[in-house]
Length: 89
Image (cartoon, rainbow, N blue to C red):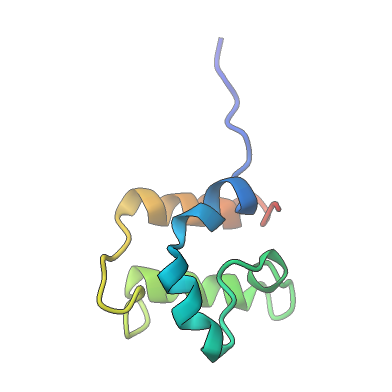
């Protein structure tokens, strides 16, 4: 029997990837890492979520989190799956 993977959830899976120090550091810049509404905002094709991923992966600089530790491929893949699964809460 093949188990069907549950869609990745922001509250259960993604939110927990961000450390409180990262959330606190980015908040003054208007980047609300712990806020589902901000992160999943559909305006501009979910640009907030994509921008965060681009900074986490190093596609955009400076790479997040500032000073590291940088996310490994497992965390980046989980975040990407959340996006691919439709930005579930």
